[in-house]
Amino acid sequence: MDELLLAGPGGEECLHLGTPLDRAALRALVEEQCTRLAAVGLGPGGTAALRLPPSVAFVTSLLACWRLGAQVALLDHRLTDHEIEAAVERLAPQVLVGATHGPASALRGFSEVEPEAVALPGGRPAATGHALIQLSSGSTGPAKVIARTASDVIRELDCYRRLMDFPGGGDRVVLLSSVVHVLGLVGGLLNALRARTALTIPERMTAAGILAAVAASDRPTTVIGVPFHAELLAGTVAPPALPLLRRMIVAGELVRPGLAALFTERYGVPLGTMYGMTETGVIATDLSGALNPAKRPVHGMRLRLVGGELQIGAPTSPYPGLDDPTRWSDGWLHTRDAAELDEVYDLVTVLGRLDSQVSIGGLKVDLTEVEQALTALPEVREAVVVFEDGAIEAYLATEPDADLSLVHDGLARRLAAYKRPRRLALLPRLPRTATGKLLRDPAALRDTAATAPR
Image (tube, rainbow, N blue to C red; front, side, top):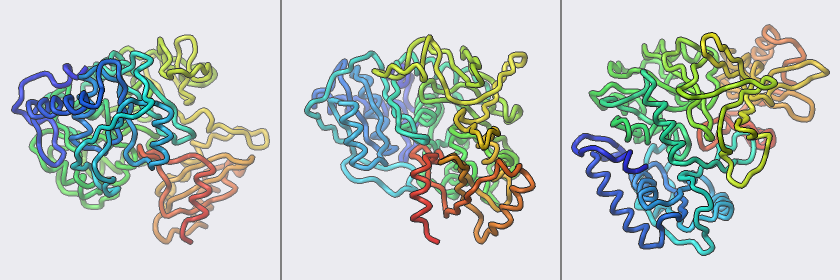
């Protein structure tokens, strides 16, 4: 797969993480890293885990592992040592590639680090032919181990190639999503390498840092991130003129009502959306914003509804060593998302998690509807709504000095009494997973609320 990604002449910038690199320079760095990894015993059929921040070191280590014929597991560099130890015990890689110094600031977009490869005692060779191992975000519970073959990734890249409004040759991407997770990795990094699209990661993941990165080029530019990043940019009241900005594309969560319109008002370009999973990559898109909230499935994607659940055609299970028919069975992947399918116009509308539909006194309540009612209120920036111990709870990040009575009044106008949260907890900011998704684990939310400053 690395040959596909690195093919082509050098000379043209392909990667900019502090220092611009062309393809020839990147190939040379990959060869150098191959030598280092081979020296600690990594070879065909071997296994490696990468614990590296977004960096040239991450890119070259990943491509070098694939060039050597190894299976690669990606570990988020922001995980604690305890979490890394648990992941290494679970995955048993033969080689662990880390950085020579600790993690950088949380607002740092990329790091300049040297990779350090260490052979691990007890590491096992690859038991399957998968090229890539990822862990799910863990936003709703324990992370899942997900495996993809080189063919799976190439199929997804082909889906991106067929999307008219997705960045291609001669374009530029400013990537905000984590390269450890599927959107940033495949839709951002790998697509940029294959499509000959210049890729930049901002030095600082602040609104000012992102806007500076967008402005620093004469190429048509697309920003790729998660809804949190769109919220951040839409909150900039007087952004600079960005004549080469073509659109922003977000995925990972439902976009709150009003955000797309606000973003377009600020920047004069669409806020496109995508729906996907780590297990499959991209599933459906609305890159122009014209279909909102619906999306069109990408090429070759087979969808069906069973009991209101969206299921995706998948010939094999993406969960190595896991036999769970509630996740995959008979060639269908269970998304656990509620959706609507319009077969006439070939559209899918994702409504939210299937487990967001709960019963209160025999009456059905969709927690996604409650969240959207909250985020539509002017006092509320973000909200997470959960169901715990038979009651609805809401955790809110509000505007400074927001009047909670106005939130209660707004909900009373929008929702029937049985749909309203029994408890509203105010937080300075809502906790997020490493991918930028809002954390939805009730126990973790309760702990955060208990320790938040009053």
